Every structure is written in structure tokens, then in C-alpha cells.
Length: 154
Ligand SMILES: *[C@@H]1O[C@H](CO)[C@@H](O)[C@H](O)[C@H]1NC(C)=O
Image (cartoon, rainbow, N blue to C red; front, top):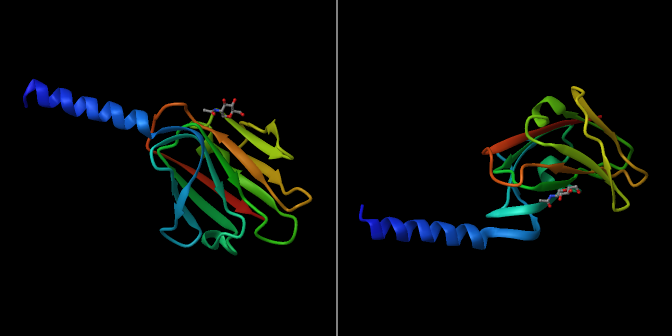
């Protein structure tokens, strides 16, 4: 390959990378590859991704959810409910989270509370609106190709 061509390819990659980095919050594209699974990702690099599963058909009547976040970068804010009209508790498999997320925050009335734990399960109770909003803090640059966020709803 000629030097000029190589240089051109590298330049194109750098420009693409630069235009794809977004600072504002971006909605996650979510689809399903099996019952109660979610394949989630954003186009390009987004430092602040949001996914609202309230009333989502993808997890309707699921008591156990496997969410795969593709190319995690920055923060993912996940709204788990209300999908049911009664209080519930979420048990997240924390052993799958800890290698990848430095912190997990619970968001309540716009306020963040650090709920990071080293326990096997990260346990969260729905609030008075039957809602649980969690923010997962991933690496600031691309580090690995994906992370599983697996939780049971009881
Ligand atoms: C992710 O969220 C944490 C906690 O609010 C914040 O300190 C951090 O700056 C955020 N990271 C990005 C890349 O926005």
C-alpha cells in the first residue's frame, strides 16, 4: 500500500472518530435477539447514553432481563420501570458489572446517589412511582466490546 493511500485512510478514520463523538445525551438503539434480552448500542461514541425500558415491549412481563451493551463508553442511564403497577425489587448480577463499571448511581428526583457495591448482587427497590433509574459509569474511551447487565425483577 502506498504511503499516500495509508495516510488518507488514517486521516479518514480520525475525522470519522471526531465527528462520531457526541457530548450530549443520546438515545440507545435497542433490539432483542431472544425473549427478555436486549441488544443495546449507540451509533458512534456517546458519553451519555440513555435507555428507557418503561413499557418497552422488549421486556414486557420478563422477570429476568439480559441486557448487552455494545461498545460501552461513558455513562448509560437505564430506566427499568415502571413496567408493572406494583412495587418491585431489582437484583443485578454485580459480578458481571464490577470489572467494567467504576460506579453505579441511583437517580431519584434528579439526584444521584452512589450505590456502587462489591456484593454479589446490587439490590435496588422501586420508588413511590414504581421506578428505578440507574446510571452505569463505564470507561471514557472504548475499552472492550460489550458488557452484560443482567437483572432479576421480583
Ligand atoms: C458519568 O457520570 C458521572 C457521575 O455523574 C460523572 O462524574 C461523569 O463525569 C460522567 N461521565 C461522562 C463521560 O459524562
